[in-house]
Image 1 (cartoon, rainbow, N blue to C red):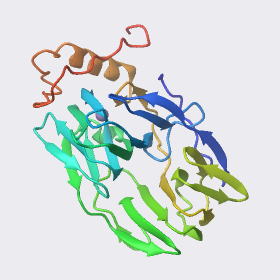
Image 2 (spheres, rainbow, N blue to C red; image 1 turned 30 degrees about the vertical axis):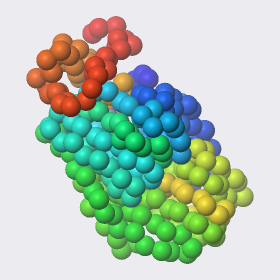
Image 3 (cartoon, helix red, strand yellow; image 1 turned 90 degrees about the vertical axis):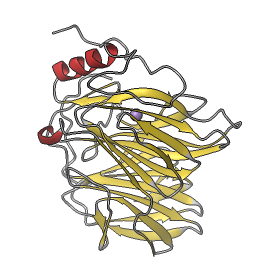
Image 4 (cartoon, rainbow, N blue to C red; image 1 turned 90 degrees about the horizontal axis):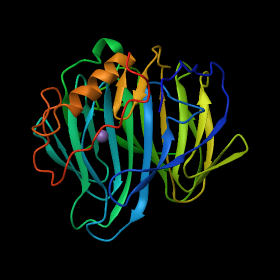
Length: 308
Ligand code: MN
């Protein structure tokens, strides 16, 4: 991944089809990486989106992501199936179960690991990153687990509000910029109309099943980028469809995404890489240490640009 030129949000309603690409994470799990891709880096402050599963695996062969650092972002984990243990360098050890969100604010620096529980044989999840605005990017790290989120039925669909506010509901998840995130599941299929905020840009990602919007079909892991300026979007969903709707005010800042870091300068990213690599053995002063994970932490790759 490289430096991102600011990528404009479309100021008018459009429909852009963006295919995910496969990426390996730890353990036997491959994911569909939806953001960032060449055609689109951000939707609001959402700057990363991995869709894991639905996957079935032998017990003990699930997700296993060794301790690694983050800065300048929030990791936002939405679990649909399976059980995943999160540990971090603040001392948190938290199992996340279906219907729950883990939200880790990296700020100036944190390290964490994620692993399927030993007897677990399934995984279906989305992990997103939210870029922190420059004014709070160096904030103290924090971790929050949200076991219950607002959920309701609407037009033959079950909606769960993951982030922001929608339809009179307010999600408890702590945000630093105007965003929304919704999981929508339709067991029997539906034709539905979702009100939108014209100031937000939006993306819709089917996680299972398929949708039709404006005469176009989108299957699982095909992102429909909708731009801005819409009052609503009409959708047809086949039975068993689950989708994510994410949106937000376009990010007004240039960001640099590299490895597990989000920053506002290459120098800031280079410093984080140095701080992680120089503290690997005994834990790092900046990132701390993840206690309890069996195995070595991840090593940062070399920086893709020449040292300034
Ligand atoms: Mn991570």
